[in-house]
Image (tube, rainbow, N blue to C red; front, side, top):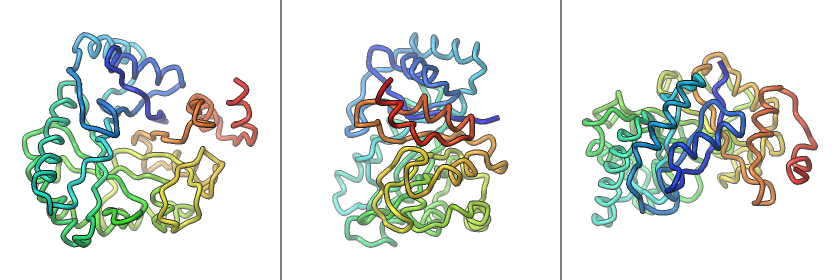
Length: 293
């Protein structure tokens, strides 16, 4: 079964119910959201009544809630511990975010591994693992380390780096991976030959660790290390490659989440991109249709 959805909003007044309604309007059967603004760590109280209403609707529509994803805010950085106050804040915030996930019944939280900001890749890996060892161990939520594009001092653009973090973390049961197609391409991986990539991933980490895939085209060529998402089929990765990834039998039960940009920064493309993905036919006039509708 194809599990396809997108990033959706999570607003104070509607919360999970609003997120679900937005996802359903796109024709999605899964989705991803931030439990507050992605650019900061301000959070408001979870409304259990709204959560329960959303769960009832998902049950009616046979949506597997275990495949719904939360994303941690971008600004949380475990890779640099030079400023202990900031480092400890990141650890404590992620603990509280996992508690919010548990209150919501969410099982998977995507996390950018972080940027070492000059301390070096090896120390960055150790800092991330040390932070995760303080965060994991008493939670039912799995943290998914996202593969990164390698912009600046990002940790996690190489599978070996992700593998090294996992090796150093004690609670491996609650640690997984989120693949991002744009990030993988920008990091230099040949995802046109995706089965070959999966073989490499399986040897280094294990396919069972892949719990989510962000489906994005890229504005840049392979190896650019820039991380600029593009709409499906309109970038350098291309529609056929993305379709082959989405429908790869080895990842059939893994949720695929669109993070493609709004058209002209105004119009959400997800309803149209999801329909195109379901039909497996690229529509080169898609962006014009979105603007006109």
